[in-house]
Amino acid sequence: MDTNYWDRFWQRRITRRHALKGAVIGGAGLAAAAVVGCDEEEGGDGAAPTATGGASDQPVRGGTLYEFTQINHAPTLDMHMSTFAQPGGHGIYGRLAMHDLDKYPGEVTFTGDIAASWEIAEPTVWVFKINPAVKYHNIPPVNGRTVKASDVVYSYERQKANVNAGTIRAVSKVEAPDDLTVRVTLAQPDADLLWSLSDLRTPIIPPESVEAAGGELKEGPIIGTGAWIWDQASYVLNQVSKKRRNPDFFRKGTDGQPLPYMENVEQVVIVDANLQVSAFRTGQADLMDTNGQTTELLKQTVPDLYVLDAKLLNQTGDRLWMDATQSPYNDQRVRQALGKLFNREEIQNNAFFGSGWVNPMMFVPSLDWILPQSEFDNLVGYNPQQATQLLQAAGVDLGSFRPTIPSGANFARNIAISEILASEMKKIGITAELQPIVSQEVIDVFVTAKAPISLLNDPAPRGTNLHLFNYFHSSGGVATYWKKLGDTQFDRLIEAQATIVDEPERRKAALLEVVRRGLSDAVAVPSVGQTQEFAIRPRVVGYKHDSQEPHRFAFTWLKS
Image (cartoon, rainbow, N blue to C red; front, side, top):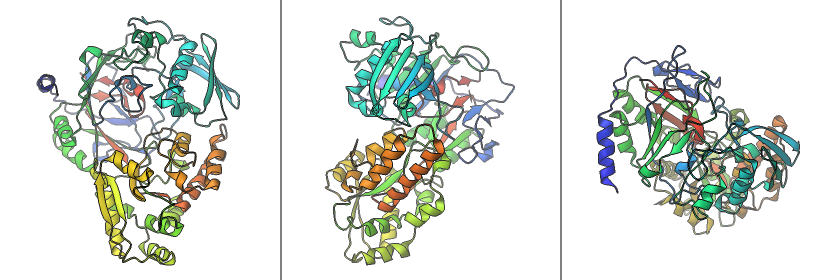
């Protein structure tokens, strides 16, 4: 580790500690009170995804925002060559579309990024019009030229030839009839195409930068169209990534002035959660993920802290996956029984510090697409008595049934969930053995049939269709968990909903049928999903939180 860098970092930050008092952080933006809330003790109205300094405040230019992350970077800087976190995914590259940050996280909708507009010319043909004002960063060898449709063709063809091809799995052909028109042809209609094209793993990359690097951007350069220009000279793998303002960014703020307002964003990787908390409390960062317990600690030193609390529509939480080809899990009644031993209230209180929520199945565009609680409870709700009856009906001897449950040792949450599940099993006479191992190994032992049951999280794909086809359709995907069940009816339900493009209520109904079938099959039973609490210092104004949207810092400014 570059200890000289860390010494310089901490010394510099200690001399810049803030002593902001009396700032009022209110809420503005969404009317989805059930989804997003400002911490009640901070006086929020329970309806805000943004931190704002008040209606009378005007944006201030300049300053550096400091953010901590626990996620290590990928060993390559090439966004097409890795599925893991990379500096280029954070506001440097652009995509055809982006999340509408004024709607998220209450719902997932989309607006143009590089594309100014689009239309569905045919069920399998989308036509995008490039915004002629969008330019690449003014860095050799691209030198600030405007984006062309041929760049999109090049980027998608390059992506389809590499590891992130699955993100645009529905795209069969991309054409550029002229410099400002992109014609995307699909293998079949895809209701989630915009979700795929807004993914941070679907960047538009200028061919010149790849050619200059000899065909692969493992060490850069990272040249995009985003609000931030990457500071390659200061980059230290898994330590720090710095970005400076792009003076040629095409977007303007609500005040009519060019974005972004801030001069720099600095992201520091700190894997140790306790160190993150200590650093935030001493003024070393402006933003960080938190939870109920940690939030109370932060308030002790930042009394006017703003806390954003959101249910994450793009995460489904931990599930108990069961191999339907191995006994006794090949009996649906056994799988359903174990699902009814998830004491989700206990999990919320102990593994999630009083937060968390239940997302029954998949990524959804809005919370009103979630299966009603009464139906969920009937299918897999906590009920030890019914669990006992189902196991007995399946001929399981409770005293001799000794399941081994692998779970990710990387996260205390996974260990806590598995311990609670084992405790509930013990109450009805089942002795479970817990096996904490590295998270990736949990996946490996399950998909290779070395373990017939595992506690797994499936957060990777963004978008309902990507999620369902990758994890639940028998054709498989990144993990092929569900293929062991071989439920052809379930496959047909997934396929049917995927092509319902412009009839949201019809698609919602179709997706609910997918959920009902999936929960009834009970191969993957949900425990509790994550609600994200995000701590924001009072000097941060206008921040629109969507951890999956690279442009989220473009609208932020800092109080002086």
